[in-house]
Length: 129
Image (cartoon, rainbow, N blue to C red; front, side):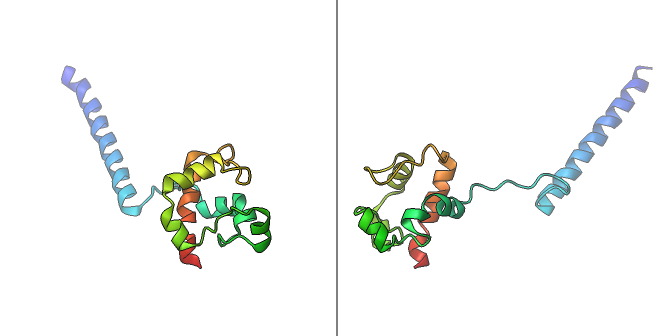
């Protein structure tokens, strides 16, 4: 009688494992589970840059003449020679904490992942000249 009770449990366990394995197979072959949640992507560095940085650095990374007159120390982010000399950690610090009286801090407006996304986008600006 004991074996009679064990068989349904074993069959249920095998069926569950088979269902899980078939879902895993469809997930890996199809790229995402049908009807499942969309795969989340990281923050959009370009959109964050346009929202937070474009006003001073322009959409291309080259500040306008008016902006340069107002902020004498502003950097051109599409200048490949300049950008080659600036390490990522320096750019991250400036975005997060600001620089001097002109470059305000964005650490209270963006989280670390968003700041990193902006850095990655800013690194593409010299190639967009």
